Every structure is written in C-alpha cells, then in structure tokens.
Length: 270
DNA sequence: GAAGACCTGCTA
DNA sequence: TAGCAGGTCTTC
Image (cartoon, rainbow, N blue to C red):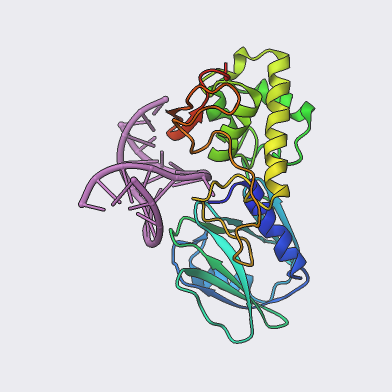
C-alpha cells in the first residue's frame, strides 16, 4: 500500500541495516511475472554477483544502484514490501523473490497481491516528474504550466509529481482547501502556492512518522521490522466520508475522480 | 475520460 | 458473498 513516505521508510531502514556494499550471492524468483523485461532465469543471472552500490528512490520507485551497467528498479505497487532475515533461508508465504547477500543477509520481497514489479534498466525509471519530497516551488510551478486537469488527477499523475498516491492526494487537497475536481488551469498563483506547501507538508509529515502517520488503523503498511509505527496522526480526509470536517463541521463527501475514491470537504475545499 | 485488467486478502 | 483496497497499464 505504499506511497512515497512508505517507500522512503523502507529505503532508510534497508540502508541502516547495511544493505549497501553487499554483493548479491543468490537470487530466487518465485513469481514468473514479477520481473521485466526478461524472464526469471535470465533476470536472476543478470543480478548474480553484482554489488549494491547505493539504494536510491524516486517517487514510489526504489533504485538499487548496482555495479555493472544495469540497475534494479523495484515498484511495490499495492502490497509489496521488503524484510530481512539472516542465516539459512526460510521463505515466507507471500515471498515473490529473495536476494541472498554477502554476510549472510537475505532480502525478502513480500507481495500478496503480486502487483509489484522488478525491472532491470540502465538508468532510473522513466516518465517521472520531480520527486514529491524534494520538489522546489520553482519546479512545481513549471510542472503546472504543462497540464490542465482535475487537481486530484493531477496529483496522482506521476509525470507531474512522483510519489503522491491516493491518501496523500486527498490530504494535500484538504490541507490546501482546494476542491479535487477543480481544474488546475484555474488556480491563482496564491492557490498554486497553497497546493505546493500542502503537498510538501503532508509528504514530509508522512516520512517523519515513518509512513504510518496517515494510516487510520485500517492500513496494513508495516516497515522492515514488521512495525506499523508507535504513534500516528489521524488522517483528516482519506477514509472519513460522512464524518464531520474537523475545520467546519460539515460532513465529508465521497466521490470518484480518476477512478479513485476521493474524500473532501464540500464546505472548505473550493 | 472511462472501463477493464492485473491479483489476493480482508471486512461488512 | 460481495465489495473494497494506499497503483499503474492497456484498450476502447
């Protein structure tokens, strides 16, 4: 279920666990559609004996920078996640792949819904806008001139900003007091700035709280240690249709925008 | 745009 | 049992 903050949390924890600098000494792929652009046997062969130089991230993509010409790009999609084990390999029920690393560390990729994807590519993922965690106001405004569509659809568009998903899109629009169906081309400069600040604010809050801050108890995101976070800040819009807006008291409404469930306050968001 | 496809597990 | 899920791609 990861959006940018969840992916960033996993990245930081894998780095802290010392994944960088380790060599891939074994590869097991248990789901034939996991990898692109080649089938598991060839994919495994290309990963074997490479060293993870650095673990990077852009938007929702994890980028394993490897020695050699190709990098391993991982997208967790809806239910993907990593965890580590040591010693003799014991596979979990939903493990779709495992990388054995030097020093006896095993990196498991768990993904119940099998939506996650591993890619081998020369560079970074394509067709991504600026990363939502580090985007500058200037970049954000530049992106704005390129598209005119409903704000909710715009925020979910990874070519516009990389990393924002359904929860953080709703939270950012609530924070900015902007209606999800409002066309991006109608925003005043002040409103564009409000939206920029809101996006950065909710994404940073998510990262700070280890990606769990916006869970409302229903979410099942767990970090590397299987923890869902010791404290959480309640979401203000996502998943709260029918509840009173914490700002004006009017019940929040649920609509569908860009095929995604969208919750907003008809009183506050214009 | 909208709808379907990809998948499984959880909740109502 | 039906409906829903925090993502993205393909095809009208």
